[in-house]
Length: 487
Image (cartoon, one colour):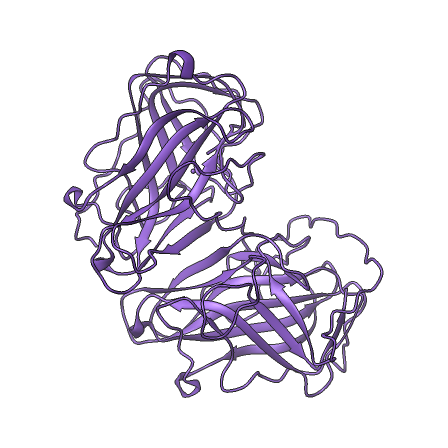
C-alpha cells in the first residue's frame, strides 16, 4: 500500500563525469516466500529531475535480496543497471514521472542455492549516472511518498511505484515496503491477471528503494507485483551493496495542510524534564539545529504568508540529530513565496526574547539557475503548548530583496541573513509560558520574472560540524542572540 507524506532526496554529481550517484535505498519487511520466474523483469514510474539539460542524468538501479536482518546479499536481481545517452531517457529539468527505457530490464536468476528464504528482504538502490562532460557540478533529485494516484510516465505528481513482472512474492502481514531511513512503501491489493498497468510513453528525450509489505499477498502465475515507494521508516536498514551507496533518504516529512483542514489528534507530548539552559556559555545566544527527526507535535496549519506553504516538518533542537535530508520545491514569477520547511521545538521550560534580540542562521541553500532570483523568507513564532494558537510572533514574514546581495547560489552553500541578523519582536505583552513551542517556517521568495518554473532547496539534519557560511556541508543552525531558552 501507499504510505507517508511527500518527500524527496537530492544529491550532486560532485563535478565528476560518469559519476554514479545514489539517491534512495528502499527496503522491504521480511519475505514469506518469493520466486522470480524465468523472464521476470522490473519497471518503475518515479518523479525525477535534473538541474540542467546538460547534466545528462540517466537511471542507475541495483536490486537484490538480503539474508534476513544482515548485510549478506542472498542474490542479485538487477546488477547495477545503468542507462546510456543512447536511450534518449535523460532526466528532465521539470519533475515528471519516467521509467526505464527503451524496455523493462530483465531480472537475474535467483533459484537453487541463492533462492530467497523466509525472512529475507528485498532491497532497491536508486540513483543516477551522470554522463555529462560539464566542468561544473550538477544535481538531480527523486520524489517519493504520498498517497496520491500512481505516477504516470510523462506527467508530474503521484505516488512512485515499482512493478516486479513475472514474480511470485508473499510478504509478512502488517509489514511495509520502504526506503531506508525515511521512506516506507506498502503493497497494494493483489492485481488480477487482467489488471495490467498501462504505461504512458515518455514524451521524448528533449522534453525536457526496499520493503516489507503490510498485507499477506501471494502472487499467482506470471503476476505483476506493484510496490509503491512510500515514506515511513523500515524496520531494518541494510548497508548498501552497490559501489555508489545512496545517501540516506530525506526524513519522513509531515504534510502541514492549509488552515481550513481540521486538526488531527496530536501526538501526546512528554512533560518537560529538568530545565536545561540552552544559551551559549557567554550568554550571547541560543543555538538550535534543524534535525531530520520528527517533532512530537506539529501544528495543522502554517502562519507565514506563503503562496505554497511548507510541506515538511522537522524537530528544532539544541542537539544535532538525524541524517542528511533536504526540502525542494518549485517557484516562479515575481514575489512568489515558497515554503520549504517547518522546524518545531519540543516544549520549552522557560523562554525570554527581550528587546534587541536577533536571529542569525547558517543553512545550506541553492537555486536551480541564476535567473531564479531566490532570497530568504522566514516566519518565526511561539505556539501555545500543543495547540495551533500563536502565543506571540517573533519574526513576521522576514523577506530579503536584491539590495541584500544575498541571492541563493546554484551550488549548495551555507548561507545566513544579510546584511545583518534581523531583530526579533519582543514578546512582552504575551510572554512564552512553560510548555510552549518555538516554530520557524523557512522558505524563499522568488523575485524573478520568469514564466518557467525554477526550484530551490535547503538541506537539514546530520551530526557533522556546524554549517559555515560560504562552505558546503555541515549541520544547519539558527541562533537566537540575546534570548534565553530552556528545555
